[in-house]
Image 1 (cartoon, chains in turn orange, purple):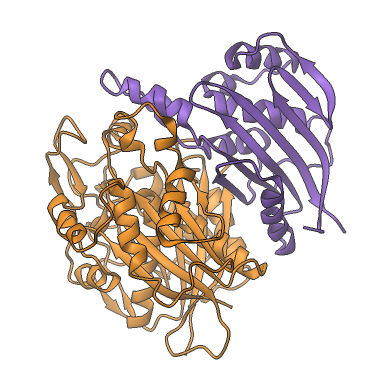
Image 2: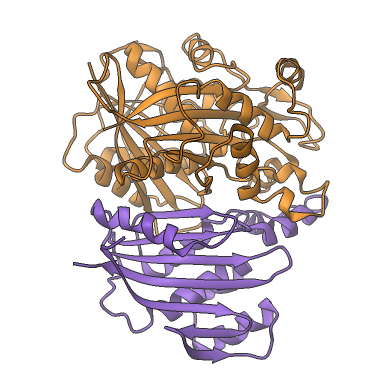
Length: 372
Length: 186
C-alpha cells in the first residue's frame, strides 16, 4: 500500500497545508486584480505569491540567494516535509512536476541550461542531497497527478520506499501572455461550473508531498493512494473532447468496476469547454450524483503545482469530512447534470477521486481511500 | 524489465533514418527543417495537421509513422497502446520562438507547442490512441530507465503495446529521435 506521509502547500493563502486549508474552508481566495507589469502589460486577475512575504521567509533561511524564485519556494516547501525521510537513501525518489519551470529566466540569459527542467530539478535535489536520480514529469496541466501516478508505480515496482513529489510553477509574461493569446483568461475571478463562467484565472503555488510504502498497520485517518491512470482524448491538442473521451477512460481505468465514490475534486478551470467536458465524463462514469467541487476559485490555476495543491486540500477535506464549496459558482451551468457543490458540506468521505485535464488532450484521475 | 520485448526500433539523427539499425532514408540536408520536409515527402503522407506542428512534434510524428508502418497488429482506436517519451530540452526550441513574439503579437498557435507532451497528443490524434502516456524530461537519454517505467505499465495491465523513446530538439534545432515499439513478453 502507498500512503501520504507528509505534505506542504505554499500559496498566497498560506505557507503550510493546514493554513491553506483553513483559508479555503473560510471562503478566502488568493485571487485579486494584479498590476505587475513584469508579468502582464495590462491588469489581470491572478493569485500571486507576495514578493515581500517571500523575502521575509527567505530571511529565516540562509544560502538561498543564488536560487531562482521557483527554486527558493520549492526548497522551502520540501524543507518542511522531509524531517522523517532519509533523502540521502537510494531508496528515496524525487519527482518534480512542472510545466515551464524557470521559463521566467529565459529573457535574462542566453545559456539554455539555466531553463532546462532537469537542471532545475537537480539543483533542488542537490540542495537536500538526494542520491537517487531526480525525475521531471512535464505533461501540461495534469503534471501534478502524473507525479503521483509515477511515484506510485515506482514504489509498487520496488524501486523506492519513499518518493518526494514536488509541483511548482511561477507566473511570468511568457505564461500569462500565452493564456491571454488564447483569450482564455477571465476578466473576473474564475467561476468554475457556473452558467456565466468565461475563462480561467492563473495562480502561483508550490506544493510537495511524501508518498511512502506502508510497512505496518496504518494509523487512523491514513490516506492511501489506491490507483491512478492517464488517458488521451485523441481529439485536439488545445481543446478538450466534447464527450470527455480521455477523462471518461481515465476514470474507468482508475476505478475499474468500483463506483462507491464519496466526493470528487474536479479540474474545474472555468473555461466553457473544460467544465462541460468534465461534466460529461463524470456523468458517463455513473457518478452524476456524487458531490463535485473545484478549487480554482481559491488558488487560481497553478499549472504544474495544481494537481498536488488540490490533492493535498482534498486529503485534508477527507480527514475532516468536509466537501468544500466551489468558490465562484453561483448557478450551475454545464452540459451534463452533475452535482457540483456551492457551499461547504459535512459528509463522511472515505473514497475520493481527483481529476485533471490539459493541453495535448491529456487527462488524469487518481483515487484516494481513507483508512481507520 | 523482463516482461518487455522491443519489436522494432527507429533512429533518426544527422539526416539518417534507420529501422532496426538498417538504413531506411538519408538526406544531405542536415538542418532540421529541410530534413523533415524530405522525410515527409519520402513517406508520401497527406496529413494537413502536420504543417502547423513545431519541429519536436514533426520529428515525433514522422518517427512514429516510420515505426508503425506495416505494424498492422497494433490496433488503432485503442486504449491499449501506451506512449512513454522523454527528452532534455522539453519544448525549448519553440519556447525561444514564442518568447521573441511576446513583445509583438503572441501567437496561440505557437504557445500551444511550448509543452513537450503535445507531441504525444499529435501521435494519439493521428492513430486514435487513447491509452496511458507520459513525458519525462531528463538530463541524458537513459533507455533502460524508460523501459523500466514501461515495464510497470505492462505489469499493472495498463497497456498491451507501447511506443517508448527519446525525442530531442535543442534550442539551436539539433535533433535526434529513438523510438521503440514494445510489447509484453509472455
